[in-house]
Image (cartoon, rainbow, N blue to C red):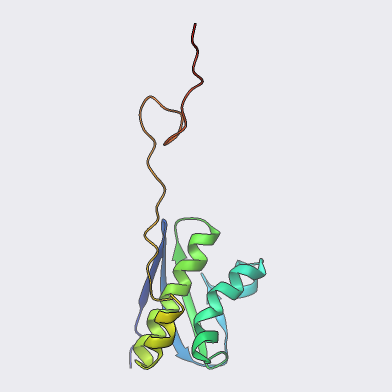
Amino acid sequence: MADKIFVGRRKNAVARVILRNGSNNVTVNSKKFEEYFPIEIYRNDILSPFKVTETLGKYDVLAKVEGGGITGQAEAIRLGIARALEDINPDFRISLKSARLLRRDPRMVERKKYGRPKARKRFQFSKR
């Protein structure tokens, strides 16, 4: 059976996630999980779908992620894992949905406007 690829997105990050039966080995861009995400907050965030569905240690994760920063990449992987778990067992949908893990966060960086230094910031006003 061919592996199914699940996509997760957040900000400008796109993650392609494959879940396999295993023992909680997480690989991101051919690196160890702890090496790619040295900050524990991001590691806990990525593993949260497994904690919610009580499947921690049952699956191996292969993730390829590109674009964005570390936060966007971590949340993109989290969404990909949540979608994969839902596909494996549709009964997980209720718990994943109540934990808001199946929701694609739509917030994006606002574009820079002309005549301004950033999106909303203005140059200093001078009366005279």
